[in-house]
Image (cartoon, rainbow, N blue to C red):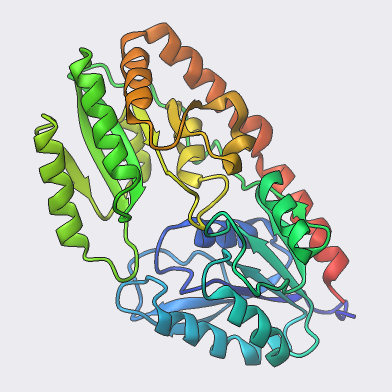
Length: 366
């Protein structure tokens, strides 16, 4: 039992340094640390230090050496090994990690190393249509969507809780739609060819040929092992061939709020979840800002319901015509903007997020 004279000590485990990048795992882990103010967290920090502010107020950082902040194999190994001593001293280990190809080995070895420390595992997403062979539960499991919770339950993970992520409307205030010049269409994608970025270029080209006036802005997240400069050149060349001259490609975004405020629409056209978040934080941030979203109709995204416009994965023709209609109909744009912001306030409120994790912590802390 945790002594009444001290706060519970929780080890927060992510696949790489928590301050090294800006993705679903890190965003969820930082959100948990933010709302669970009565807990002392131990977390993994990047060395050499990045310019980003610390994602956890207080607590004790454990260094992980990383040049770019991405979870390469060496960084994952560092986390696995360096987490063992603090996990043995912690009252609870909270793992925030998607189920990817390396998870089965981690799930077999890591629980043996940390002894009897209870584990809470938040699963942002699952790579591929099937669970990785040999995947085992680390402890009590949390999913972001009912779809993933059912998949995990059928795979032997027991009763899986569902806790959608949170978004704070005060940090993502409503911003009026830009009024000057052609519409700016923001694309959120990864360096995964062929995939969302290529589909977005094709969709934008369909919209332009149908009469839309727009500029395309691709905001890409890095992926370990990818030749990012070559992929960026290929995307610009592809856009030019489609007649989308002046397309901008960003591989680093320091001001997401400003980028969303300057945009009219967000395209999020993933063909598969690929282990990424069942409820993408970028989509929630766009909706909170008052930006309509055109989203691939994947099962994992069902929790967003009618807050977004849906298009079949890979169907750039359908996405392009939705985009053209949305840009040409201000009344529809305004209705969707209001609907999306209301959905964020209703379904992804910080109060619900904190209440559910506080209940899980109470059940698992000794």
